[in-house]
Image (cartoon, rainbow, N blue to C red; front, side):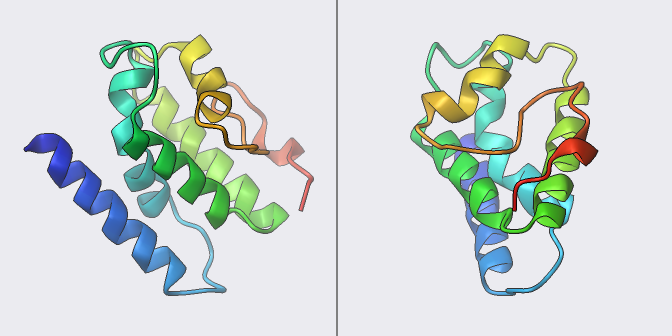
Length: 119
């Protein structure tokens, strides 16, 4: 049940972002999109991210259309990563690849988001 609620929140957050083009990226929708990834990133969800997690990763990529958006998403992902002491760095860094998503936003606690320049 808990996973279903998290997935529903993530879907609603994604819809809210897609429905409001031109809006600045905020951490609420980014965090909601990545909620399904927490078990994988903390080592409690097996060796592969769930389909819901990968959908969230793709949603974050789709939110980050401009350099400013990418930096905002990066800051949100970095802040979220720092909230989980048991986050596995290797799992975080491999997440986009495991989901088959080419992403310019690193999933890391230590990334310098101001260095993201691709638009």
